[in-house]
Length: 307
Length: 276
Image (cartoon, rainbow over all chains, first blue to last red; front, side, top):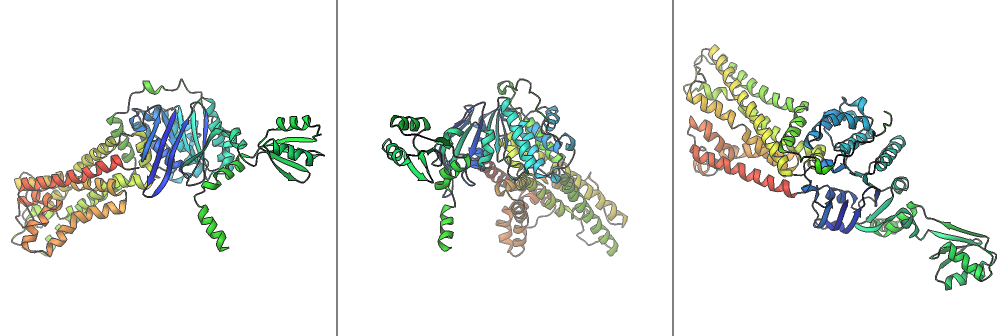
């Protein structure tokens, strides 16, 4: 269990994380979303004891990371896959980290097998492709066989084959019952992998809920209603509190679920030919909800004003 | 590379049953890290080679161009002429022990694996001190032996390590070699940059001497002698010479220790507190 409790992180005048609170629940994959510069990496670095919060606490299993006696056995992390000495072989790289964590050397061979790098164990990492670096970074995270895994943008810059590999790999790790916190600025990543999402923008919490609940909150989630008596139905719905938009022979209704709309129509003897719930894609919901928090919005406006 | 399946892990290692990583784990990790890097051997080898080669070339040049030796000629001090290169290269070694971690980003892996940062710093200090102590001794003894052999071949007066003056200078310079490597390491921690660390450590090493050249004797005696380079020399070369920048050995030892504790102390505090 990772708990972030009212955490603020300031670098000089810049507030990277602003009174952020959330808990990463055990045994599921939690997606950590936000535009670039939202504070995801800073938050992860605070979880791992690399950065100290300006105020608030971050705990892992009830303790601050720096107080965990054998941290690699509790938490595994992939922050920057390319952090390695180019002159080390994959095996040498894993060996020194294993030694630091008090992990038997035998485990190095095991994790190389697990991530599919056994064939290149003796090759210098300086010549690795990005995909191989990502696998190596995941091998590092798995060294202590931890129950909690933290991955920062693991698919960033990968080709489709690499993305597919990481995705299926994460699903296997999750099936093992591990707790996974996975950050991304790409919503599409989360639709298939995450059970729960935490969305932040400008360092503040925007959402902490299931994917279904998140998409439902979006304005672009609506119920499409087709009726020959749309003109009669619309005022009824509006009076009941729904927001109705008329579009090409159909009504687009938000603020009311399909069953209520159907009941209301039936109670007034209005025929309905189509009644369909349209969920916003995660992508659309994300764009809409983070719009206001985009770091560079001001700049975008300036550019628009010039153009 | 094919997608390997994750072998269903043996009941996941319960963190509670795992012994905490010890200082020996940290020291072992630091050792595996540097002992497997080619640059470690290149740097150490370069320090040894440059200093011994300089002494050898200087000795041959001295022997070949002088039929009689200058009146003040001292075979011990003369054979230490290459020491300047050992100081430079081994100080750089100290800086690199830390700055390389920042430039490669591995500092974060190091601190994720060992969040008790004092362990990381002490392991690095111990490793650099012992390595440079060994190489420092090796370097000064090699310079001395090569220097005496070559000077002797040209009929110059020579001496042996059985002589007390030779022991003070040769073993003293070797034993104090880690001093600037440790300062370099601490500056690497403070500045987190290879270029910055090297510039600062070499500046601290040479600038006082360079400015000292332009100073009256008073300035040399009261200002330049306070700097670590002079303090260090006072304990070794000062045994044989009594030029202005040298202090009495006990005072010099105190000065050197003060410099060391101040800079290492600052590095310790910064390393504990700063974001990595």
